[in-house]
Image (cartoon, rainbow, N blue to C red; front, side, top):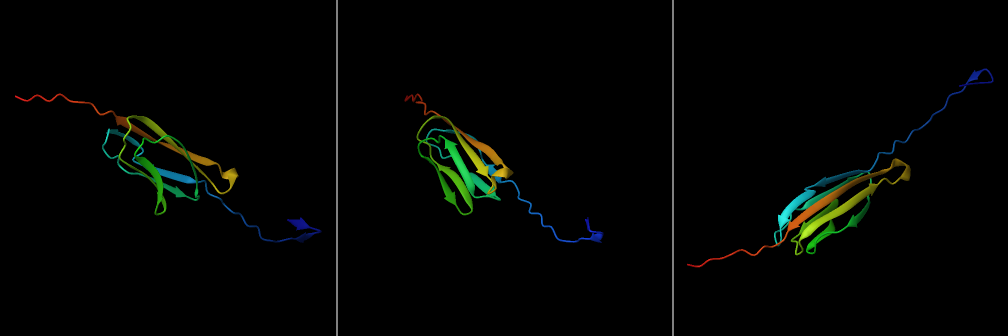
Length: 116
């Protein structure tokens, strides 16, 4: 930049703020009533802001573990359950990342036993 016929110099710094990243493993499951689900692992990168909504079956919990979160347990309720995850960056202008977990629990069915 030229000012008053002289060359002006200076420094400028640029801060790059990454978007929040959300990784979910084992997020779509189908299992039988009374059988444990495979643990669902949720990890965040570039944020610690996680908002959850939706339903989990009775007997299944969401909790923090190490540097992330885990959904685990043995369902005691049949049905289809959706659990929504939204990770937002520390800077609101960087947006949000969304994902979901789906767990389908087949109802317990009575079998026929024949004794001869």
